[in-house]
Image 1 (cartoon, protein in one colour):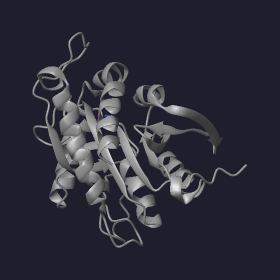
Image 2 (tube, rainbow, N blue to C red; image 1 turned 90 degrees about the vertical axis):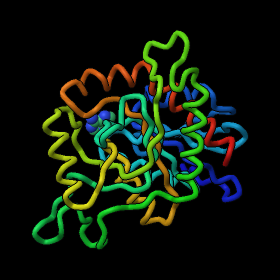
Image 3 (cartoon, rainbow, N blue to C red; image 1 turned 30 degrees about the vertical axis):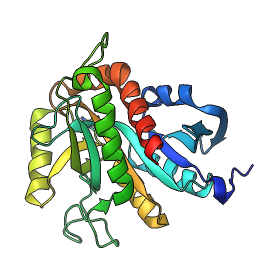
Image 4 (cartoon, protein in one colour; image 1 turned 120 degrees about the vertical axis):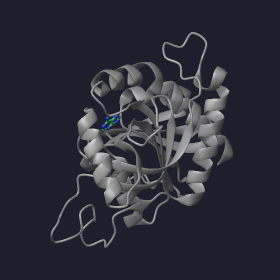
Length: 261
Ligand code: ADE
């Protein structure tokens, strides 16, 4: 079966890593239609009058690259936007804050001494940029989303609330590792910093999707809510945040974004 769409209706792909992050979006989808391909479900429909495909990247760089490739090759999407959660690495990047990516680095890529540490071999580059125009829209959407939460990230009756939550913009590091130790996260941050990469947050997919989008010449942008500080309590903070907060944040962010698209 071929899922190619007409170019005039080429949708925006909204990617999430986890089902919990996606639930709120599927609930909002108008005229939902599910297609299955490559072991993945793709939800087509409309959100705020825009054609969209909702998909799960799954977890890790390879899975995310496969999903991105399927979205481009089989579903003909015109842009990809990632909404998900990340561990805070930068100073002052706290749980409940939001990081909009300007660019991405793979923190676990090391082909030295053949290539400089972190450089993607045969690409001659270490970082992949997010699309500037999409990123500017996402930043505005993230600010509006947080402002729409009473008391800046606080919602009456919410299990977790984040008064004073902030929106940051900067470098996100991706790798095939859940970073869950204060010492581990310090070593990761310091090594990236020493190589000239001032990282704000760590996750497991963004740089892979950015590289695929670069290969295909497709705009990509990502917004990540901070679920944990990638420290000794990350394994407790992460699932709690994902279950209680991530879906609401994703919905708020995507709705604000699509309204301005
Ligand atoms: N996504 C959310 N928190 C993370 C962490 N601590 N490490 C990697 N990916 C994450």
